[in-house]
Image (cartoon, rainbow, N blue to C red; front, side):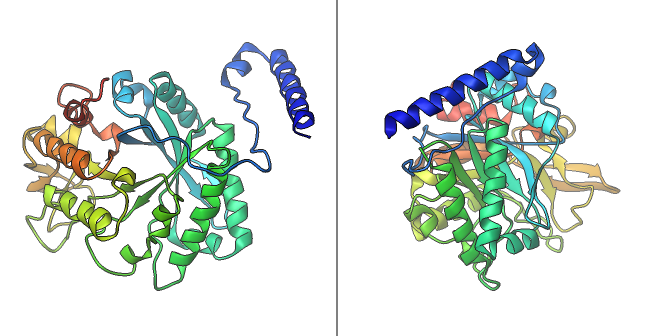
Length: 357
């Protein structure tokens, strides 16, 4: 039976090759053929690939503005986003950009994940039923195969314990994991809450997600700890990074090999509105801010001379060392907010951990 199945697969492959040969050169250059999983394949995680350096790339950025060297600094590029719809469908934001990002990343030896996002209410509706979960997983895997992705990143913000989505989230992630891990073919990561504050969001992340090897690694969003009513509060200082890793790794028992520390490539003010006042690291340090500091006095969004808080190079290097000692990776939101020169935060990460680029 095995020989017969292999023979049929070879015939299918041969037929596909003939079809591709008949296409134009342009079509051949942009067409990826990936066979679906074979029934009966072993379900197991793909091989880990060392210290993760993850950079999100949003659909509204132009890949041409990010250098090849910046792509080489990451071994994972998360394309943001493919979004869940109200009916449990999936739409890829700006597929032309996705194709260009995937090509540029792979040309520079980086894996490419599709990051899944959307409204919490739509995730809840989808994950409530087995039918909804099954259909959505199929939609995700179709995108993975069509665009030649290496994995999936789930950015559900956020499942909760007070509405049952903690249970449906775990069920959905298990089903998606089984599809990704069929034949050890695709990776699965998850963006999760920082973990600083107790409550229904933090407690919704079940330890089964790591004890059962459901998720390969977790992108811990250790930023955005701001308050519009409290001035002089840094949204992502070193203390927050320490608190987050201590909670997930030491208190909750997440394996250090699965923990990835998130860092921001942008700054936020404190004590005022965030609308129009949040600036990229590149903008801040190209103006009055120093790449060697973590705050600057700026004017934007109708506000003059307010203090903005960000991560400068010294702090990013300390966070990279912390991640080396307590975790297994650094994640950045997002690549386009960083600089492309010697003051790049991604460069500071790579220099600290000894990653060649």
